[in-house]
Image (cartoon, rainbow, N blue to C red; front, side, top):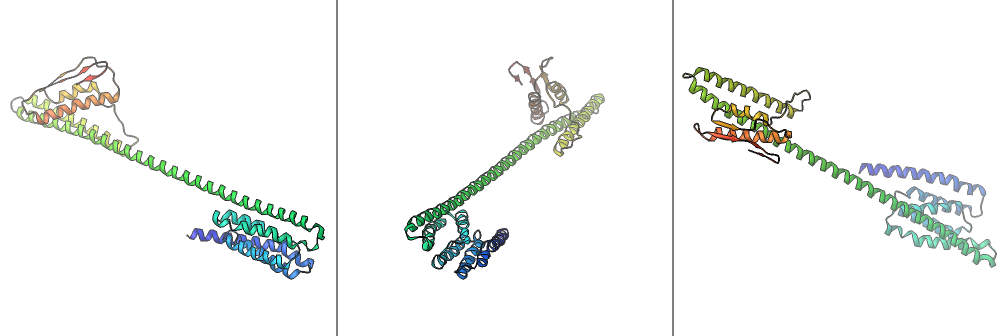
Length: 334
């Protein structure tokens, strides 16, 4: 609201300065010429020029003031005066700044001015030439009025189209920004889901292996101390490995640029992972493993890891399992 008021004040000041300049340039010289109708010329010309001060802030008021001044000139001034050029600028401004319905008010006023004005100038023209002169002058005035009105409407339409284009571009930008934000949020959600899954796989498997090995070490502590020591070594290696993986995942979440990331686990790491789970799981896997994409190798590793974890958690202390991996050209069967 404050911005609109300041813009209106700025326009009013500029147009008032334009009106003053026009007064000094078009009206005052008429006084110096000493015309017989000098008082009427000065008064109505001043009023007509004053309408320029409202041509953008209140175009309808400018039209009314200009029409009143023009009526006075028709009644009291018998010759055209330079101030009448203001009419063209007022007509242009009305067509430019008023909506189409309000701007139509200018048309009948312009037609009337184009006819009545020239008729009031015919007093000094010989009677035999008045009809032709009046017709030519009326056509000239009507042509000037029409061009001023059409030019104003053209500028108004162009500005309206420009505003529509700017609004459309802004809407497209906002829609693109919203789409990018939604895509970012979706990607972040997927990343959080993947990280949560990774953490679950790492922590759940490692803890299951540690629990199983700890129970075995407890049972073997008195009977086979060397086996208990090996179980404790497995627990230590599993814990260190889990801590390393968790540190890498946390570094990824923090976005640390200096974090060192090792290769993702794949098919070659499956035997070591199954061996840590203890002798109750037998692994059948080809000696020569084919090269596979990182995503496929990680998926196969996580599937076996989750299966081993579930076995250790739910199958009971005496259960046994066999993990079989068959690598075919089209698929990996687990």
